[in-house]
Each structure stands twice: as C-alpha cells, then as structure tokens.
Length: 243
Image (cartoon, rainbow, N blue to C red; front, side, top):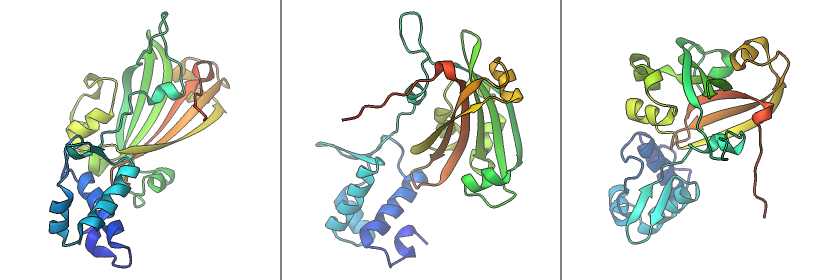
C-alpha cells in the first residue's frame, strides 16, 4: 500500500507529499530529473491540481524539489562536498581549500550495536557495515571517521575496492547502491581523544578533538548513514552568517 493510501486521517496534500518522497527515495526519478507536471500527477492520483501544487510546495520548502522557471520541477541534488569546511580549515599555502585524501583502514560486517541500531532505526541484531576511514593532507592524518551503514542497502560496497573510488563516499553510494543522501543533520561536540583515535590521528592521548556526528537520510527521511568524524582542535573553525 502506498503512502497516499495508508492514512486517510492526514490531509491529501500531506499524503501525496509522503508518497512522492517515497517514490523519489525508490529512484522513480533520479536527482536532477524533472518530475511529471502537476496536471499529470493530478490525473495519476485522481486529485486536484491545487492539492498537487500544495504537496510540491512542501517538498520545495524542504529542499527535496526545486522549481526552474519555464522548465519544470526537478529533484534537487544536495551538495555535501563543502560540508567539512564549515568546521575544519584545510588550506594550502596560498589559502586555497584542500580536500583531504581518503584512506579506508577497515571495512567489516557485524550485528549493529544497540546505539547504532537505534540511530539508524534498525531492528535489534540487524547486520550493518562498519567503515573506518582516515582523511589525510600531505600524508598527515587530519580526520578519523567511523561510518555505519545498513548492510541490506549497501551490499555492493562489499564487492569493490573503496580505496579506488575517490575521496567522496556519497557519489559511490549512489552509483553502486542506488542510495542517494538527500539531507543530513550534524551535532558538534568536543572531547579528549582516546588512545585508539590518538594513534590514528598521531596526536597525544588526551589532546582536544572536535567530533562531528552526522546522520544522513534519503529523500523519504529514512536513515542511511551514521558517522562520527574526529579532528584535532587546531584545525577547527566555526563559521556562521547572522543577519
């Protein structure tokens, strides 16, 4: 049963919004593609064009869709490439931004620890993939990352050499697994580094590190990835524009 048919207690536009989000998450339309016109969707779901427009308005406000004047409404592709630079300063001698090299240190499958299953909304005992990744600049470690993924949605990752896929994981998730990260929430904390992460980052135990915890979700809001990135406080910066 589709989201549009499931709960008639919700307004029709909200049910259509949920249905369209599920269809997008299931790759009925790919990022960058146009969705059908409002008239076509109204005919498909036997509802008014006004109801369709209201559902699309919600998805536009949420950043799932974007309207392009004279062209139609398209699936918006989020840009995560610059997210690191909100919190960490990785620059060359001339001030240019540098993207850290990626090195996969470990990849394993295991039953999800309780905290992981709760964050990823998985039943207890579900198998997950755990990645340990190091980010380096000029061969020096700057970030240590622990990444958790539902195994059922990312099984193809186990068949390739991720080391050869480049420094960004999200394009790999999409091309190999059909999983598109549409949004993410991040929490920022600080802690004294443990022996394990001190060894990875090549810093003294107890040194201050900044921890960015990210939960990434698909277009329907289902969790796809939980990661913790730890970087030495000397690289940390926080930049926000207040008006």
